[in-house]
Image (cartoon, rainbow, N blue to C red; front, side, top):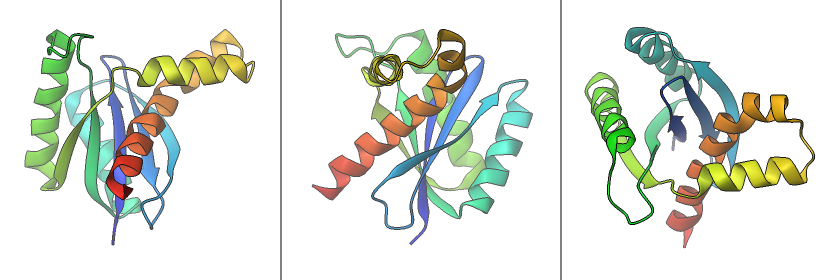
Length: 138
């Protein structure tokens, strides 16, 4: 059984997390600074090979009323690229509250604002993936 990759896709960064081999816990791996779609996919390909990924969970930003806005459309488009390129199962996961939750936890842990900016995307990816793993195990 391979691992699952969790992605928090933004315009400037992609937060990346991976599950353990049993698919119970999500760990933050890195935050990719986006330069071009070609480079983004290249880095993701390296991580997919390194972590033996067989499934990718992508956080889908929705508006609070459940509709999909421009950011959500971009994420769906990016997911299509992932599917074509890597031939892996792609799961779009409602991420409405993940960034908020990640930020709250970092504030509670008293992480400085500058440091929070650096880790928030990776943390959001962890939340997205953990949410998916927990739901799947129920």
